[in-house]
Length: 452
Image (cartoon, rainbow, N blue to C red; front, side, top):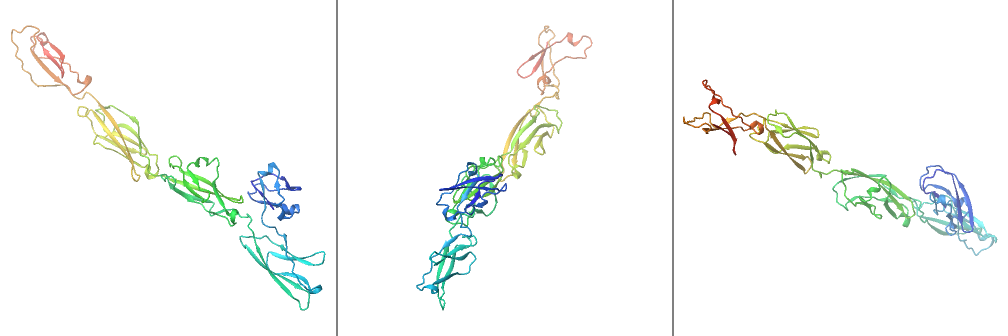
């Protein structure tokens, strides 16, 4: 029986082994960082016991501290094991009876002869080197019995030795690491990869169970991926999102029916798909815009961001309308600048549609509308409705009577459109203000004055 390491151990360990009616303590020293499933010693040989009796005598490890680090394994028959064979029969007596046995040439077994108390001989088969069922499952030998007569007579029999499997082979993956690339829009229940570990043992020792190894680094992946414990097929159990996580590392264990394991890693690369439209952010905006602003004046600073990657994140921006503004690019920013002179009296505000389109396939776009008001400057003089007014005044007109109305307008707005009327004249005999006065009033359309 081999005594194996269940986990890496860094210390010298003393283990108490108990069997039915027999107990013994064995002291072993092992090297730190021994790999799991490493063989430490053959306890049957060390205790001087028959390996074939260990199972029936219920050998077990009783040390609490050692149970989590070590395990016992009732494996392959060890070299030196003996198997008694049936004696040959010869009706003759004395030297004419069976005197010796011979075994056909082979590399695994030899023959020894034992003598009973009555003087008869019987053969025993001795195992010289470990058997390997995976290399040779059946050994066929010829046993020959010879007498001592003259002439010598012999008899033969065939020995067919079936090697029973012991779990001496751990499962084996074809690779230590597998790499898979998946688009982030892969549907749920799609197959990611089908792992296949092989085990050269047989029956239950070759039955493999697959599972994820839950560690602090990948425990949050368990909801996204699932693994079939029988087939080793890994499937999508949730949705991928490249913008959240662009790769996963899955640790997988293959365990055979005898408890031996193999490990591998599956690296999943998430490939971006164009599932995010560009985002448009206005980081700076000047509004209203004075109508006397010079071409080239920056009006707004616009940031463009796309959560995708590669071509899916490359964005082009343009203005939809025919307006006196341009977009100038600078990395992920665009500057909205004035491209021509503007006149508030012609257009007092602009609605500008900024369209951002990525270069994905198919492309995605987003639109942001900016409303820009144009502020007035005093760039227009007042204008009379006529250049010349003619008025006829009766000579007997009473003082204070209204004799005439005049009207002027200004296309500007606010204070820039407020009109003040004054009278000037070339009359020298009397000032015009001694004869006439102005009265201003506001109707629905304009500010007017009456000469009184």
